[in-house]
Image 1 (cartoon, rainbow, N blue to C red):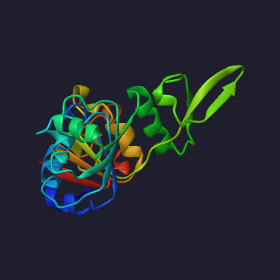
Image 2: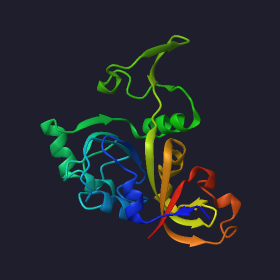
Image 3: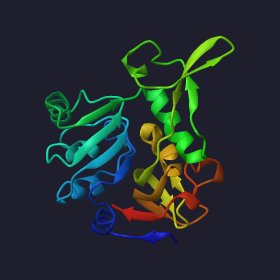
Image 4: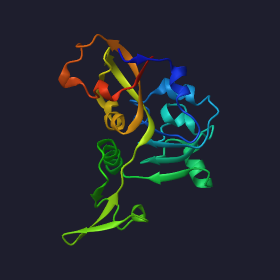
Length: 215
């Protein structure tokens, strides 16, 4: 069985200045128990890669009121007044990335790809500072890969080998983030015997998962 640890042990793996990826879409599919415990830890200067900054009391959103995050790479901050206020007063650096571009940058980080070319954002503020590459007469933005020190995933079911299954839309960014971090911690609702999850239903293979937290 994959090494099962407690919520507290998972939080101990996160320290000042780390880059963390957090799965979820407005906390659906997030490692909510780990993040709630993390919000009580006195750490600062985190760089967080996530789809959104969630709500103030859920998911990754709980990290913003205590001002634990220095920079967030995300697509949306509109549901969290703390991340909005910190962005506006300059205490939080926000790198907005179109949602599909964000997913692909993470995938590139996980697959060892040096980046990809995209038309999305060309001619807008999103293109500022980015390299332009011309292909057959058409200009593209070079979007670079994203990786993290640790990824916090929220899964519905895992088996004793560490294979993960996500129910419904909770899958979202979790599978690509599992590929793009040095350490992967999965918070799971249920652990079943190996073989109970049909192979075709395994969304994240066990080889990508370092630690499990049962909640």
